[in-house]
Image (cartoon, one colour):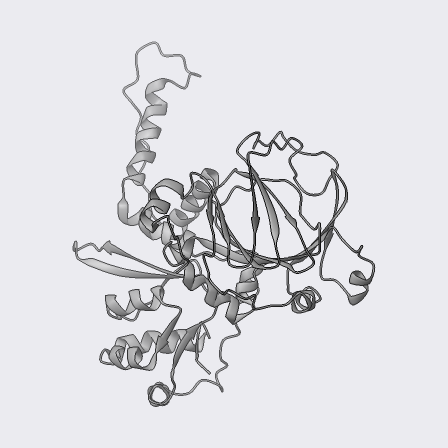
Length: 394
């Protein structure tokens, strides 16, 4: 876990998370970037990798280039004031995926992805604010950060630039970061980071943001798919001599009461939110592994035999797992598993194993042997292995 130093985890969660920024010096001591600038540049040449280059051409003049790039792209870049950004690196490089373990003090299903930027001296993406939480880890070189809480509104932007940058940026705080330092920023805090050398690499551990309309639309889709909420609307008691075209207060309140009734169904809300929180974005969905073919799939008995010699399982980094406890029709507690936006068939695996599977990024052979005491646990493992959502550790 990252080091909070003079700030305790309790203090961070209660006083800083989604409230105000926090500077954490040497939060990951002796941290070294997994990827070099050259390797990041190599990733930007790949078709399936989302990459961008931002070039500052003047005080408020920025140019945005979108990848994939070619080696010739880099030959035409200026000597300073440009930044390369690679999205979703945790889905591509296992060592970057492992970094997420240092942030398990927050729900893993809240994380969006890890973006990595490389900048030469003066490189930056302009003053801006985001609508999501982010930890900015300085991985190499040095970066100057300027922060503001003022004028973080949708109307404060520079027109004529492909990036949404802040026209007015009143600096309230300023810091210089070196490798191992982390800056936490909640939503809607203006920030402007400028590379101080040609070795500047920054990891952005970003968290998902949910808009109310997005939640509402998703919940409606869930009700349709589950064939739920078929309750009919009931009229209020109509007055005599009513106006035939008027939507009365009593009528709209009847509709409101009906909608509120479904929002009071805790199990329905929880199962929907489990699906919503684990949904993949379009880019991630395209990166899911290919399942084993029929000829590649051994028998269940052969799979059990392989478990005796393999050293463990590791999750595919694209997949999103979560679980919840709900009550069934008999008022007994049931543990549901959610994977990539679906309520998963657990094959009646034990609640402990379902939670372990969702919580951990890998399973050791010892943990698998303990789970093997319940054959249903192994059936669930076999199902996920066939899809390559779990793979044997090499």
